[in-house]
Length: 143
Image 1 (cartoon, one colour):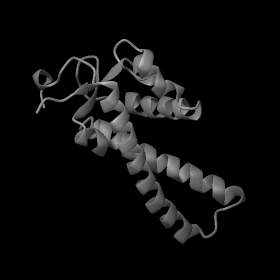
Image 2: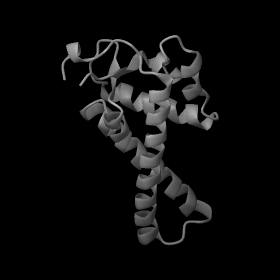
Image 3: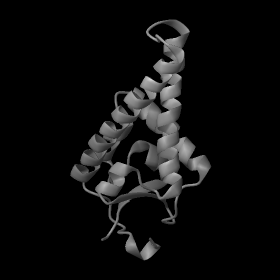
Image 4: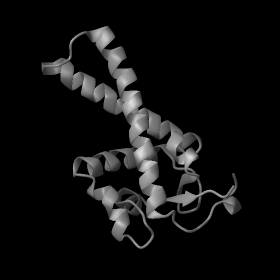
């Protein structure tokens, strides 16, 4: 997809919210599958260091999924379904450095009760706080 096929307007809050719900379903499915793999290899992980290792493993796997999608096409599965794409200010795909930074900041946003995501409600361009800080944006793809 070239730059001319991207709208410059931000997607609606409905579309962003629906995409986030779809993302949540994808993360849950990925987490179940990878937790099953971890438990099959490591055994019970309800306490102690195994629990922490499983949580870190899942965080890294989910991060790898998002970062890979953002680098490859600028779209996760949910973003494809809702015709959205993540780009930088020049409408180009993110670099590895920015994709990692976005995942880290999005994690922090989520840990703070989703405040970084709720930022889109008050932002004039409907950007999440981590996108505002990193100067990237979610745009609507034209068919």
